[in-house]
Each structure stands twice: as structure tokens, then as C-alpha cells.
Length: 443
Image (cartoon, rainbow, N blue to C red; front, side, top):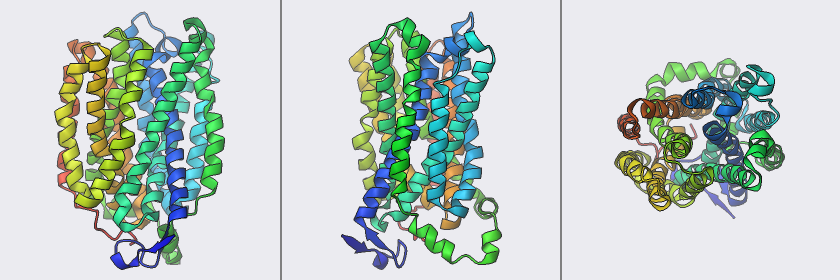
């Protein structure tokens, strides 16, 4: 079934919406993002729970943990670099080609971590290589996430762009749950000595199998019709121009504010999924299995909350829904820590679900909002840079600052104040940006 979308003036003027193509694009985007998320979250889980003694042994366990979490932050340092390089080629050569490159780079770098020697056998070379592969992960993810969102955005019918772009963000749910399940399963099936010796490597090596499936799925997806239409109209002079230079020259304010709007959701999610893992095991005395199960159940709320938030933005507008989402996070972060600090399974699960539903109110809307802010010529570059610049502060620094705040104040509540402050910052940046839901994004 095909539906012509030319009449509403918000899609490609001559394009037709093909549901079968849209399904393939949707599945490929969600699967690719799930694979990338599997790789990222697997590393985050390992950095919080096991990498400290394996790669950063120290007489002070807090020092080991901080060094381990620093490797997690390296990904967010790499992302802006990746977003500039990959965003440029995504706008120049096409979305599909870049998505193949990012998928392969991410999958191979994750598998390589499974082969690394530890500090005990290789000395400083071991953490150095760990940092190198983590950098490659971040570099690749910078293009993967934004490219997958843009493919959905530029294939979708105009009145449902928010919904389809938001669906991409349920991919990380599958990636997180699968990575946690792999980690939990291997930890359960073997004793502590075997798990710390070689069992942890299984989850990283499994990335090779997922990569093979991802390559097949991506091969069946057509290029973005908006990119093809715009590329066909480019003059020889336009082809020589660098998309990245046009972005910084023509849209600096938009880029800065969009980056600010993307800070809060990173801080919320990574404070929960990375820092709280180590906090729960080291401070609250929870087992790895208990806290991973809580995390998996809480993140699974995204399967329902994200599509709802995304569809809601098509009816009410992106900007309004995002601002409501930031207020929701602001109001949820203190109750989350209040319940989490009880150290009891059910209250911790309730607080975690509350925070993740609040997070979904933002995460379901931010993909379409960020992508729609920029014209087709620089959309890949603009959305990738904005998303990943927000990730440096919100994702890279949040777990480190949270660990430092808890170590200094011996309390998790300063961490809540940190996330609440970032929610207000992102709220302000969003308030200064225009509504995008009614825009003609084919230009």
C-alpha cells in the first residue's frame, strides 16, 4: 500500500510513502541502533562492575572505579570528532553508505575488546588498548545513531515523522536488555573466578554474530529519498562545498541550543545505567544480578513510553512535549534516589521505573526535534554534532561527576541536584528553539 504525501506540504513534494519500504527502514534502523547500543551498554556495565580490577588495579577501590569509568567517558570525547567526520560524509555521500561503515567499525571494535589481555598479563598496554577500542566505539556511534534517525525521518510520512523517528530509540532498549542478559547469564552460569578470568569476554565476542545479521539487514534498505532528491539538484559548485563549513557558518545558534537540549537525557540515562550499578553494588551491598535485573526491567518501560511520547509529539508539537519531559525528569530525580537508597528490590525498581518513564518523555521526542532543526544539506552533520556535543556533558561526565560527588559528600543526593540542574538547562535551550513538527524538511 502506498500513500502520496505531496498534498500536506511537509514531506518531499513528489514522494510517495511506501509502507513496505518504511517497515524495512524501521527494522534496519532499530536493529542497527540496538547493536550499537549493545556494544555501548555492555562496555558501560563492564566498566562499572568488572573493568576496575582487570585493567586498573589499585590499593584504593575508589581510584580503580574512577579510572574504569574514565574509559567509559572516552566514548563521549570521540563522539564529537566522529560526528564532524561522519556527519560530513553522510551529507556528502549519503546516509546508507555511512551506516554500513559505522556498523562494521562498532562491531569489530567491541569484539576486539573480548580478545584483550588484562593488566596482570600485559601491563599498561592493556588499559591503553581498551581506551583505543572505546574511542573507536564512540567515533562510530556518532554517525550510527544520527544516521539511523535521519533515515527514518526522511522516509516517514510528514504527519508521523515524530513517531517513526522516535521508534529508533527503542533500539537501545533491546541493546541494553540483551547486553545485561548476556552479562547476567554468563555471571550466573560460572563461578566468580572463571567469570573474571574469561567468562566476561563471551558477551563482547557475541558482537560478531550480531554484526553479520546487521550487515544483511542494512543491505536491504534504500537510500533516503530526500538525500537523493537534493543530491540530484546539486550544482558542481555545491558539490565541492563542505557541508560542515555551511553548518557552522549558517546555523551556529541552532547548533549550540540543540546541543544544550540534548544534555539532560544523556545525564539521566547514564547516571542510572552506569553510575547506579557501581553505587548499588559497592555502597548498598546489592549483588550484580539484583541491580542488573532492576535496570533491565526499568529500561524495558521504554518499549511503551517512547512510542507514546513520540506519537504524542506529532499531535501536540515537539517543543511543548520536550519541555514537559524535562520538567518530569526534574520532578522525578529526587524520588528516584530516595527509593533507590533503600537498598530494597521493589522500592528500587519503582524509583527506577519512574525515572525511566520520565526519561522516555524526552528521549521519544528528541530525535525528530533535533533532526528537523536542520535543512537536508547539513542535517546529518547538524543532528550528529548537536546530539554528541550534548553527550560529552550529559553522558561522558555524568557518571564521573556522580562518582566524585558521592565520594566527596558520602551521599547520592548531590547527584540528583546535578541532574536536576541539567534538566533546567535543557529546558531553557529548548524554549529558545522553534517548533519543528510542521516544517517542510525536504528543503
